[in-house]
Length: 623
Image (cartoon, rainbow, N blue to C red; front, side, top):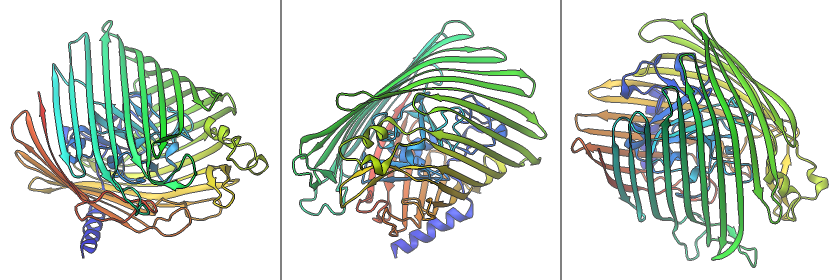
């Protein structure tokens, strides 16, 4: 009965008026034409010039819904699905329009925070906490023009900054399974110098991560301490220096590792994750030109333990020197230019393989017809895989004017991904397939397009987008349970993902606002089979009520028609969450929320448990 009610609730709201966390922030009262995003071309761009699909989650939504990890917010976006191997801190994958998580680029205050020590230099979203964040922008589709040709979707995260004068807050929350979250933020400065600091400490006893862990089943806990710091110094009215520092220290317990002595699969596993990333930049802001020269560095250390004994460890590092400029040539003409020289390295025993890549790109924007058109190209010179050129063209045109205009948008772009140093090193290691079976890995190439219709304004809108993207010569990991050989293999052919995204928002009167989205996504391997853990149907919906001193939200999501790695159907999943924020005084808020209100236990990943029903209460005090 409970599941039937949840099914009807989720589907009714998701199909009624689709959209959640829509691209324009209606809470600030801006029109759609005034709202800008940065993730599309790395420079602020108004929505009425964007031909690519972008969705935004602002700080008000982050604090109202209250999820501790950004994965829960990403899972609510159109065309995005997130799966986890258990609870908080467990391995997670974010797939944008059906593509693998390692093709997603995550940028934090301008820093690429992918983990260089991971197999495909993928971001570790399971360790990214939401406390202390200001904004999350999601660029969907293989649009790697400005962020690297291998970026099959980009997530740009901005930490909280000073609004004006001195700002400070402290937040505390507690709940089920020994969960506690403490966060503190302070920022201040003047016209010359300013800075911010936020620190979050999260701890939970967790729950049993794996279904098959039935003998002496234990809780699999997680601890995370995250620090964000930023600073800015105005040298003159036009020149300024900026810096940011981000540190993540995560300690995770899990199930399903190999015993260090017997190599048997056991459920007493632990891993420590440490990432430090920083960036310094020199910026110029003029009437017609802006320019930024920056250097960034990121390093990660991961240590894995089985039954308390060291199993293995990995280390990685990345560095990038980049220059970005935006020029307004004349009215209606814009140019964005960029150069990035990067190096990625890993530590593998006694060797430290590394790779350099030089990228040069440019994009020209022109006000055209009743909108704009942009065209850009990128040239990459890769140490190991030579020279490649990729490109992107996008269009945005208004079809009908009025208070709620109707517009059409579209984009097409290409890219490539070189095999990671880890993939190459692993294939020459002792556990890989014989070289005669794998052969040398080649670079992947990609192409994707989208076309869509947009109607309305931030308060009431509908958007429909049709997308199609393909990857040629996809690299994938394979494990043979008979011979125990494993390695990175390559499909000689094309994998494909196509689908439709429908999203929208509308007021219902009496303080109510509803928003939702619905995505149909069909993914196919080179043999025409459905690709694992990519639901054909996903949807999310949010009903918000705003009173004088109380705000409440009911959030639902679902996934349908997914399969596991053996091609067996996965159960359909639903989840219903509720949250309330009470404004007790100008400075004090009380919060309460429930995750998985109906206690649905259907698994996202075969043999892994999901978050049971959990209650949380907290407070936030700010000045």
